[in-house]
Image (cartoon, rainbow, N blue to C red):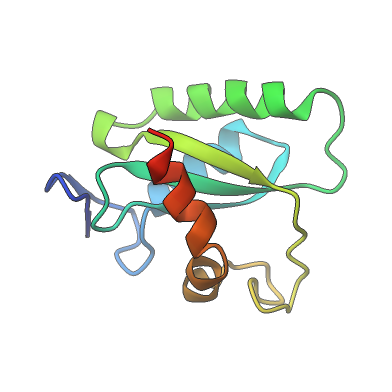
Length: 124
């Protein structure tokens, strides 16, 4: 179980995967997103790092913003993502940040993007 700094608990469907429900909702409503990492443990609210599908076309920022609104509408208030950043990085399979089966390695992602995560909280 994950808790925000305000003490609100979020319950992902897989206990060992923090914020899995939020990540699944984002990926379901944002087809342009290849990977989503939601962060919020011991923080006041949830934020997300988004890696785009390399074949995503069109007005991607607007489509992702609309998809994020749709994803948030399916989640409880405590599980809603308040801020997100679209990363211009690629996470190749079998790399440092994702496995060969494209599962996100959370700890390396949190370390590699710590400054961007902190910036998402500083913006609010």
